[in-house]
Image (cartoon, rainbow, N blue to C red):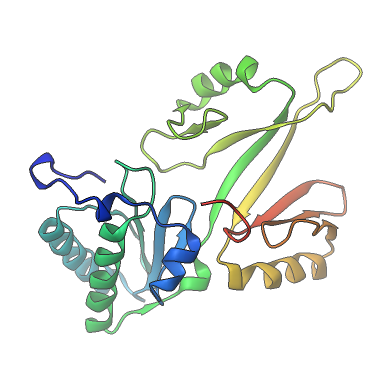
Length: 232
């Protein structure tokens, strides 16, 4: 998403909003997911989805603030972010409200609990040593906001981030990937319970609700995460 230089945002519009600030806006259809405001609208068919996308396009042009959109047969997904400040601002909040009104006008319901973001995490004792390789293999680049993260330049594929770890195999070549799944706070505990009911193990909830560490029956780990308990 870009902002035309001729319409520079005000100081208020450049202030980043954290999860609590977004929650205070009472955007029923939307959830804060890292540096983006996201929603899913269950259109039910492609034609309705296309009409919603067309209305979103007109709203974005009017606001001069452009979201990332996904259109599939039953769904329209929307991601809003102010890239000039690296996060969510009032510009995104205003456009989110307008998009929700457009969806309601078409009789389209939102599915906020269906919003999630998956990231890949790789344990390493030295991320600078291996980051160039993974950037080359994936066609990624180092994140401007976080030097320990590699991101898709087009913002489509999942982020790969490097977690500091001293674990090594005897030959020094232990590779350990795990998935981080960011979900809305109201979804997290249910997701953890479902994973345990499906045969998993709760490895740690020491820092919940920031994240829970889970493992399958073979010991492969994944984390369910939320924005709660994190610095702005």
